[in-house]
Amino acid sequence: MLEPALALPIVLALGPGLVALAVVSKRGLGLWINALLGGAGWFVALVARLPLLALARGLDIYVSVLYASLMAGLFEETTRYLVVRSRSRVANNLRSWASMGLGWGLAEALVIYALQVPFVATMTSYDWAVFVPGAVERNIAMAFHLAMTLLISLTVIGKPLVLLLPTTISLHFLLNVTATFIATRLENPWLVEGLLALMTLDIVAPVYVYARKLLGAQ
Image 1 (tube, rainbow, N blue to C red):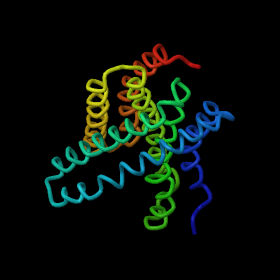
Image 2 (cartoon, helix red, strand yellow):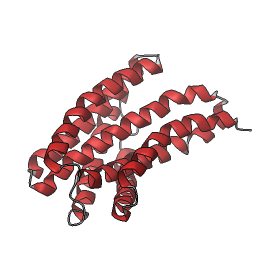
Image 3 (spheres, rainbow, N blue to C red):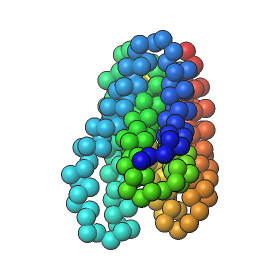
């Protein structure tokens, strides 16, 4: 039987993003649609790259990490751009793209974390506290997806796609690779999440300031 305390890490993984989305979107139907499209975009990017990820089976672990990270960057950031362009006529401010980025991150947190926790707990009998670092990581990832959505949305106001898309792909690839290798080298999950948070903050903060300056908080 699952312990009720397992709800705590799940709430921690999803709660901040849901609150942020509610604050950003409020009663704006278009903003909630953006969030749903962002979530759908993440899922499409995941499903689309699964056949290619199967090709990495049997490869050296380091090669597999590099390959999987590259596929994540290519598919997620390209799909993110396509979703952004699909809403470019009705979404043109900071709140619009923030709602999409939050929806993207929430979909990822729901599918690869929240829905997995009960299953893993049943199979392993892990205590609920074991899952807390993973919940923190989901919030870090959500902040990253928010930043990447804001960055690629700058193409809507005329910033060059030839520069922004490779930038988001590269950042996604580098963060995935670095996070994976740190996790394999350090045994303390809190140290891993702390380092990951610092790296993500170094990306998110300047992107947010730059996007806010160009898009405005309308």
